[in-house]
Length: 231
Image (cartoon, rainbow, N blue to C red; front, side, top):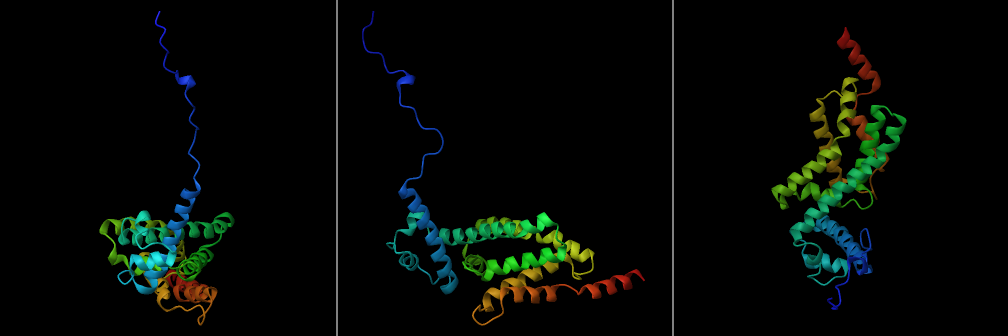
């Protein structure tokens, strides 16, 4: 009989814990630092422009060594794209949240458009609103593949607007072709990021009222136009 010691059986080996390992304090800090980099980079890219902002500027704003951002992002261009992607994903999530009450209560198309416009002003002009303006005005600084990926997110964001505008067009409240109207609306709304000053200008609710008056025909005018068409 062989009296040599047998190798340990699988049952004697230490059991591995199931599920994902818990994040360490270092892991959590890395995640926080990444978000700080995104926030500071968005502010600097918006204020100074991508070309005039150095990684040293961004690192200093976060209190890092000049080379530390490259631990989280392989290049300044990668950081720029991450800022844009973060902005779009955040905008989509905010829009979905803003529309939930309308979905639950079955609001009409005019009320839904008001919600969409008001939420879009929040995305562009509210607290933490540096991300989307960077995407709007620094698109030339990213690669074609990155622009294509952002276009998919943009399409997801603009998707809820289409049935609303279709319904308003069918009811005579929106006179222009729906696709052109959508492009012109976003062009007008997005330009507010260039001129709006919350310390001197109207409130975001007042901006929303002005946009609704600009984009939609009054109900009486729409009814009159529909009657004339029928006659």
